[in-house]
Image 1 (cartoon, protein in one colour):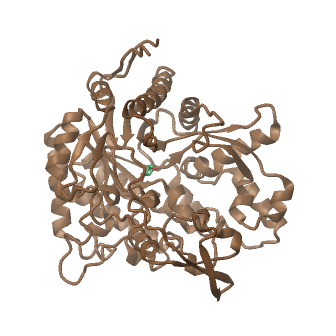
Image 2 (cartoon, helix red, strand yellow):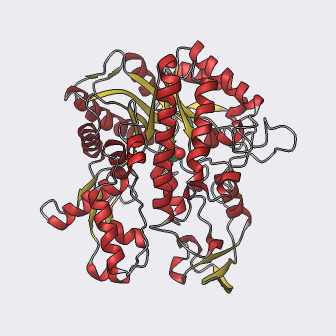
Length: 528
Ligand code: NOJ
């Protein structure tokens, strides 16, 4: 039996989504010849979908699901080419694309009505860069897409729902990817002119902006992580510990330049705020008394989160990250600078470049240090830099991890790191439905509620400690396109029937819990 927990009266409760994951309408709103508002994810996914040939550097890199199902077909550019002999067609994952998704591009009235019914005060969604600027650049904006978003924002405001807008959520215009994407520092200019365009076009109504969603995850796609765009097996090379760092460097500067544009040219009249939106996790040492395990947890914290926060506080990357990279370079006789420090000019742009701090949180980890033997054999530079072994994560329930405490720890850590009096908002926190037909809907609902309750109790503790948290968004508003997992992973408060061309939405069992929480701003007593 727990007691009820109150949240401040002006606290913003809401839900979140992203354009690519819900909108569909993949070819709409683009006129004339400019029909290429494909984004990186789109091209990547379609390639996965239609291709049964892929290349890897060594046989041990064959994705798990293809082991025993591949035939060697040749060698190219230092890599081995395989053909999948029986590519399985799993309707929910491998052939799933986001061409229609939840069809939200056509259902703004329905979606706003559902948000209203749910009782949210804030809705966190993203704008599609490739839809708004189909050439990738800002010289030929797409009027139809702009009108679409203007109308949507107006509908939210008419229903007292505050828009919290992400400028870029994994859907880079393909044309920019072809120029190297985030590994090319030319992206700093592209992103900041896109940001200026958004402030100019929507800034009279949007007061809460985040620039880049989960930049760490974006960077992993440039480091060769399987399943994350734009990683391309055909390249026959992996850029782990190279492409990822380059893209982090450029994304941070792109964020900072966008922030400075807002600060100078828009904030004085628009009075809103801008933040970046990193993903966060807390890593517990496997053995709390073991110094090596403690160091491993610090490495995770700094590699995963500190990399995006420290530069905005001091203009530098975290010391422990720089030291670990230096050490890897010495061990592997690698003399190229992989994580380029910021210049003095860049530091000035970065330091303090946020009006509030937005972040996502899902799960905590349990970690230990990689053994010396393993480091010797490892060829992946980033893995050596991070030097950690994940002992437990959410995929392995046999090793329990206190995710709730992890959330409290990361929030406390952030509040100590960031500027005094920084306000925080959680843009995403969620739990996917248990994917097991033998488990009843009631049990699924119960575990979802239990998870959010656990996080919210810690959140309210942090607020009582004096940390200024002003909002919390549940991922997600409705079931949606879950990237490499297609439509299999379901996080929604509303369920979507993806077999039905109308994509009807229905309330899930957890609806009442969230509806009441959002309206009362109170976690009711748990009598279970
Ligand atoms: C974080 C990402 O921002 C979002 O796109 C994704 O769907 C959720 N995590 C759940 O995996």
